[in-house]
Length: 320
Ligand SMILES: [Zn+2]
Image 1 (tube, rainbow, N blue to C red):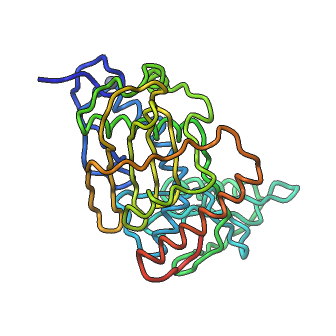
Image 2: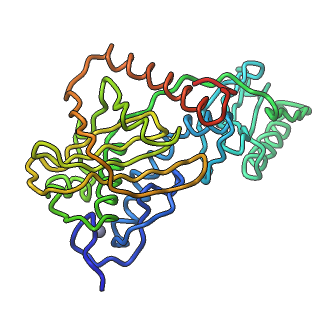
């Protein structure tokens, strides 16, 4: 018999939803309604997949084999040609967009196009019209490849926007469902924020000092989800790449007594595990932090990511 959807609690469950999103390498699923599953996939999951692309590309250079293709848009500038390039997790670089340089008369003096059928069609039409108009007699075509080169990437930060918050909440709810725990662990307010896609900043917050016990409890670069009731509150913590940690209060008034629920996805060995563990009693991060604290945390996250890579692969091919 179908139970109700762990997210909207209304519809019947007619699809399987990944606990750790598939783009992060997740395999295990819970039953959910197709409507929630589709909406989440097209909205915040797709957005966060783009946010995480720079991390995945960095990890790919360090030896990780991602299960999904990620594309980091406008990842670097090739200074020889002054063109912007995308890079994907197959380590293929593609021109981000066509570049056309014209002089005052309208004559194209230089153009760069990605090597795909649509762009080459566009290029041929452009060249033909230039010659037809008498603006040029001929053009020289050169293929410019970035294969085998390691460019300097743009600095990046993770955009901790509402899409990110929605994913964190969804992962927490999926873990509760996996353990068949009551839906009342999560307040109806949080649940409706998830299903309406309406969420304010600050719902999920990161600690200033990392939850070291959580980091140390899992293999390097692992994603993890923890759900715990402590001091009358039910909260979830999601950790990504053994580094980025997000805390969300799921219910401010929870009297349910339950074990600490823990899900781990080891992205290096592609192993998932779900177990009950001893309480970690993690403290809620502050609601507000200063810009300087935020910058320091980012620096410490990047240092941590480098350390996680070193633990996982024995060396740092590229540094974050
Ligand atoms: Zn649903």
